[in-house]
Length: 275
Image (spheres, helix red, strand yellow):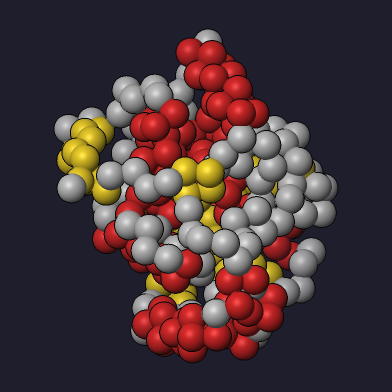
């Protein structure tokens, strides 16, 4: 069975909600968010700013237990920050205001075709996340003049299985992730090399979702965040491992990339329902 939700006249089919893992504090934070969102605008950036100074904690979704929809609004990494902001924003746009509504949308975003079917159904690589959410018509890939072809060359998970508890304890999954990586590596996107960003900055919009491409072997993207525009310049609103919390970068996005040698550029996506 599938549950039908309607956002702004566009229909999305969501699977019935799987088992959800969360703490009472997550409900409290969600209720604070509802009060916060009712007192200001309901833009993506306003939604994201709710999480300012939330502690950064990496790999909050990783363990070797049964795959469940894990809700953690107390601690965020760069991916869960983006996913939670997107889910909360879409919840508001669809005039849905319950914790269950939020969970259903988050499940749709986080998993391949919105269905939880074990560890491998989660969209682990950003390129896979981007392509699947494009197919679900949740995000679009805006045409940006000056972008260059980008083909993922993913292999990191299959070559570092010991770094992922679920893969370490399930060798068959480690073999299966190779096939997922092969499919990802058939995709093609248009990315902005960091040397071209200063010329392409004008095409970025507040709330754009970006994946920072990397020179690290086997990875497509090493960091994610949202675009914030201040005084005509793009900045990065993100869960920062360096600052250990959700922040707006002190540097412009151009300088942020330029000052980090492993960053090669950005993939840009935009919510279709960003009103």
